[in-house]
Amino acid sequence: MNTAINSLALELGEQLAKSRQRVTTAESCTGGGVASAITEVAGSSGWFEVGYVTYSNRHKQQVLGVAKSILAEHGAVSEAVVRAMVDGALKASGADYGIAISGIAGPTGGSADKPLGTVWFAWQGPLGSDAACRRFDGDRRSVREQAVEFSLQQLLHLVSE
Image 1 (cartoon, rainbow, N blue to C red):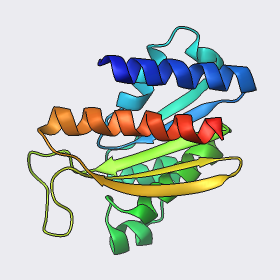
Image 2: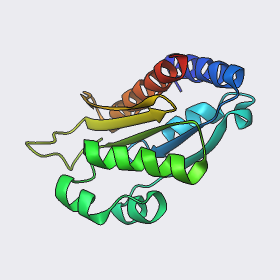
Image 3: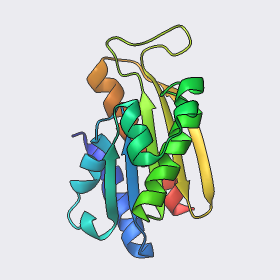
Image 4: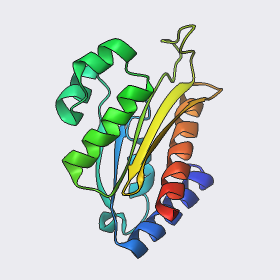
């Protein structure tokens, strides 16, 4: 794991431990990479609640409560879906903060509307929520790593507000 990701996870943990709050993750294309980075930090059991890896649409629905109609209308890689994923993860876990990630890491699966490297994020905390779409370059591993790093940056920003 790269040092930037390690540093972000460590700083996130320090902030959450200081405020006595907890975080959860709902991941698709990153396959648990954010949760893995978080649990690399010693003591993360004090501030990491649970990580959900819901790669299939069926489990996005069953585990996180994403409505079938949202998936059908917008597709798994969309703002509507990641917002529903983070909301479901927070409700299921009872954590204070959450992030959801869904994207197309490649090497196949892209389209004109959603090219390879397209990743949607949604994060939520006690003061509200936000979402963003990013397009990352590189191979599958690189796209996933960039998505993990961006996720940790956004969580850290949210927790530091």
